[in-house]
Length: 182
Image (cartoon, rainbow, N blue to C red; front, side):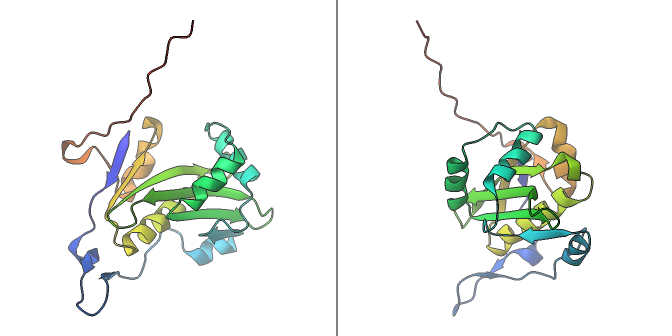
């Protein structure tokens, strides 16, 4: 299912200046869980792939029902990622939550691979990752943010501002036709 964050309110929209490139004016971030609170619980927020063990990330993908992926392809995908955020467990150094976004860098972004290790769910890590990733995208001026979600987790995304098929927009996905094998 395709979900989209509606455009930001006027107070968050881009204001052009004749002397500088467009910059957004943002109020101070208000997160459900502060960076300090996460740190006090032993979690570190990361915005780059530096230190991210792809085998461990793959294990988190598998633990939530995603297929196991070739780590070389994960690495390539991360090279083409515009924004990412992951949570490292301070005790183990392993990733326990992750999300990334790709897009055109100007108008549109799609959020992918939102996962939280089942052993660390219900601690607010998924919400912490999503709040910050959305803010990072909006700070870049990106106001059309989409994601694909399984119906069973729609309730997680709605409080973050995502809506299903706004204004009657319907997402479509290209599917290759299977050739008959003889």
